[in-house]
Length: 102
Image (cartoon, rainbow, N blue to C red; front, side):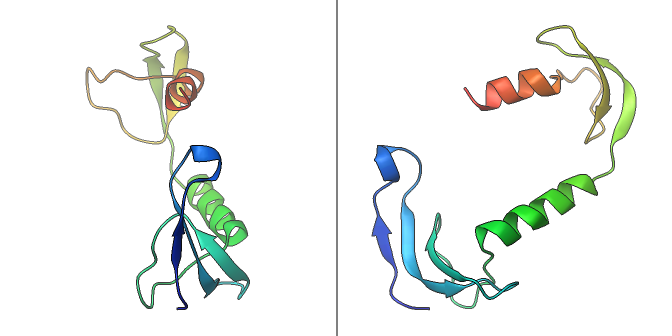
């Protein structure tokens, strides 16, 4: 790994980015900026390989079928990526994303 420099977040928002000269462990593409300080010998992925791997992992996740109700808007929920606990407060995808992005 080459010299890493911590730069302030772009536009004053988000996390600091670390500058360096690394290579993607999957496609060998050059990586010059990361949102974390990599450890020596750590396998790194470029944005494209990371997104591809993440989408593959999400699409292969088993879904649990059932009949639940969103605790925020009352909409029916018929599929979840986990088995909810009894009495657990659940949110539909729209309400979950609205909370996550606020």
